[in-house]
Structure formats: structure tokens, C-alpha cells
Image (cartoon, rainbow, N blue to C red; front, side, top):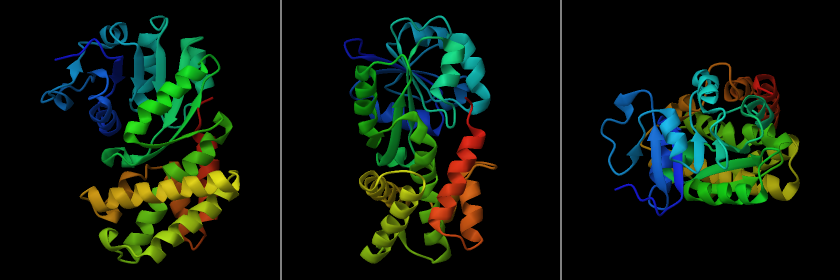
Amino acid sequence: MFNFLKKKIGIIGFGNMGQAIAERINPNYAVRVFEKDKAKTKDLIGIGQAANILQLVKQSQVIILAIKPQDFEPALAQIKGNLRNKLVISIAAGITTEYIQKVLGKVRLVRVMPNLAVKVGRSTTSICKGAFAADADLKFTARLFEYLGKVFIFPEELMDAATAISGSGPAYIFYDMEINHRDPAKLSEANEEAYIRKLSEAALKVGFDPEIAEDLAISTTASSISLSAQGGKTPAQLRQMVTSPGGTTEAALKVITAGGSWSQAALAAKQRARELSKK
């Protein structure tokens, strides 16, 4: 039964990320979803469904945009003008708050970048707020995504750097497991420490201060190991899942496979994130 006594959250998109978010937050919030591909939601139990995007927006206090890049602009066009007193949360990779605000206007907007470990509740998630969001909106979003893992709050200018570490970083670890035939369930403490050290060095290189760099490296390593140990897929399969053609992770892996360091890989990922960013 849909509980209207809880804060009402509408999720547009029910792919891997949208589904993981919905399932994790549903016990604590009144969640509804809209997915245009009805095959993805035909067996959905315990989570409300909206007939269309506008119905979802009208029935929600918070709207999470969990849609593919090719569907993003049409969705923005549909919800524009219907967001008074509502919080919009975007998890679209590489799309800045400034870009979204150009389309939607002066909306309360928070940008969120989770990673694949949302599936096991161990995501390393980076968030930043748009120009018209209140501090309370940022705090609410952070609390919401803590159901899916660890949350880091950054200024937006660090989101490309965060992409290079928490977004693409798991692929560096999966690739190491893959080529060295490491069993994720039997990783040694030395292996884990090496991952943290190399990711921490990479985080420093892309612009984080030492304390944040280490925290981000520890969390990203934990995300990656948890996912590889619990996710039911091989490191090679996980690496492929986080590597989109032409994306930031592919740019980083080209550096690593050519013999480059993780720091060099992270710089390549950060640069690619900047190139792909919609501003």
C-alpha cells in the first residue's frame, strides 16, 4: 500500500540505478516510479507506479531523475513548469546543475553521482547543490543516499575529479583483480591497502586535499570489493559494466593497459569528464 504519510519521492527511470535507489529507500519513504518501458516494472510489488511523468511529478515532493542520457532532455521538457516547491535530484552523469537550470529555470536542484555499488548498499556517492537549492535540500539528499552507501558533499567544480575516483576507480580495481586472477572473496589485507594507497594518490593528483583523498579512496575500495564479492559477477564483467564506450572509465583504462599509473589514469578520466560535461 502506498503510504502518503511519508515524504513522497518520485523516480523517473527504473533501470539498474533507479531500481537500486527505489528498493533501498522504499521502506522509509513513499516511493513511486515512472518507467516508459513497462516490461521493467510489470512485476513490481510494493512500490507505486505512475501512469506518466506529469502524474508522478504532481504526486511527489522530491523527483529523482534516473534516466539515460538520450532520454534526459525530453524528460526535462515534460516536467518543466511543474516543479514549484519541489526538490529535483539528478543522477545523470556529466550533466551540470547549470545546464539543467537553463532548461528548468530556478528549481531546487541537487546533483548526485552514485557508483555501481548501490546494488549492494555500498555506493560511494558524491553530491553537490545547484544555485537555487537550500542547504536543507543538500542535507536531505545526503541523508537519502546514505541508505545506499557513503556520501561526500563537494562543490560542483570537484565533481569531475570525483568521477575519476569513485565513478571510474572501481574499474581500476576490477582490472587488477582480473589480470592478476585475484578472488574478490579472498583478497589479502596487502591487496586492499595497495588499492587504497594508489587511489589516494590518484585522488590527490586530481585535486582533492589529503584527508578527503584518503577517505574517498577507502570508501571507493570498500565499494568495489563489496560489489565484487557480493554481486555475483566476475571482476571482468564488473569492469565491463562500468566502462561505457567513449566514457571516462574507458579513457582511464586505456592509460592503465598501456602501463600507466592509477594517478595518470585518473587524470585522463577527469579530462574526459570535462570534455563530456554538458554545461
